[in-house]
Image (tube, rainbow, N blue to C red; front, side, top):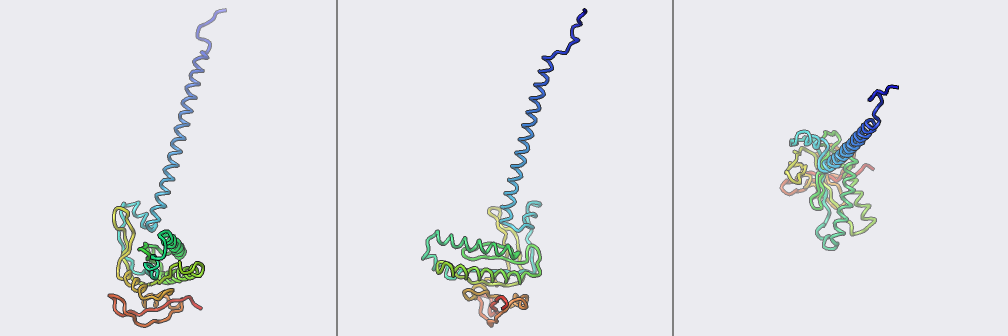
Amino acid sequence: MIHVHGSEPDYRLQVGEYATNELIFERNRDLEKQVFDRTKELHEEKQKSDTLLLNILPEKVAEELKLKGTADAKLYSHVTVLFTDFKDFTVMCEHLTPHEIVSELHECFKAFDNIMEKNNIEKIKTIGDGYLAVSGLPLPNPDHAKQAVHAALEIRDYIRQRRALHGDKCFDIRIGVHSGEVVAGIVGIKKFAYDIWGDTVNTASRMEQNCEVGKVNISETTFALIKDHFDCQYRGEIDAKHKGKLNMYFAENKG
């Protein structure tokens, strides 16, 4: 029988090719896993960054900032500003430990944040023991005054309940509300902040300063917008610092 060299397959070569292909397959699989893991990690980091940004800015403003790198200041003609302040905060701090002060502020402001979110109101900032929020921006809201007064009364009731449970170690509160126009935008490049400016903010502060403890004091402008939805007690003209005499009202929920 004649044997022709090379007519039979070289099994060693086939085994070598198989091992090489298997190695390539495993390396591709490892690379695909690395890409998948890295993509997942980047997605999670983006979610964290977006969440952090939304804790600082309204969603619409955050989206504009991500898209353009800047966010334009805007005039909002129909909003309602809510300002709160704790009575005798400085005096109370003399009788509380630093931990007690910070803990109480945290509990109160955490509750205020939840009330703002529930009522579709934008928290702007805390200023020491003061809390500033605005209803009606960045998205227009025809019920801005109604929702702001409702939130103010919820805050007042929360503080009443807290004091009933925990006594004099809890703060008491004054709340002022005024409606009008504001300019809103981002200031700074480090630790930047979304803020509002204008006479409406100043007047809301005057409403708070001239409020009685445990009350919600509203301006005549706000009263005109919400009078059919709340019980309001006219207080008369009251002299407000740098503003002259202003008509003021105490607002309460209906009967």
